Length: 216
Image (tube, rainbow, N blue to C red; front, top):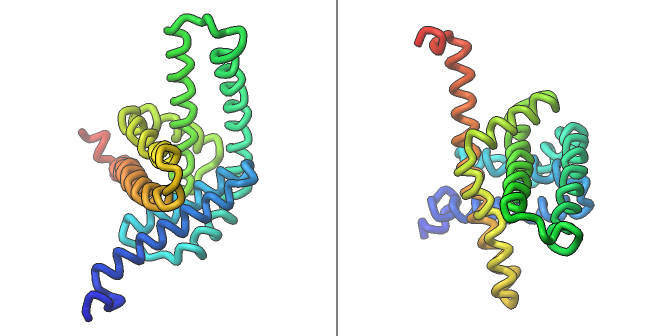
């Protein structure tokens, strides 16, 4: 049957689904030491964004290539963000259980927005480094700009990122199956969104180099 032909659309679709599942599992396993999360997520988006763009990388081989190539740089930057997250976690502990339980709502909301912004900058850092070869200082700056300019989109990405885990907790008996399916859909959507954002950056750089921006 043609449907089982390796070149058929169905088989290509199933192949991409399998690749997404593989890189999600690899990312989960490689993130367990915590300090490797930066390299693990960068590698994940390196492969997933290629797949979404229609390229056909070897999922496992490409994943570990990116993991190795970006490990040193992204781990140093990720370590700095870990310190920020530790401070934010301490603040939230005080707000929820400690001396700051009586903090005014507006200050709690401000802490929530700050926490979300830090997460957004961190999350933008991984696909940016997966696509561009930049220095650490420029990486952080670019990630901040990317997060600020795409604030509404980052809210959607935040929801899509954590929704699979909420669903898993709700239907714990089907947890693993739901996690596999939900994170596959989530990764496809997020990779597609980041590809759009980075493509706009690439086009903007091309326009700047051609001098068209100044002319307009």
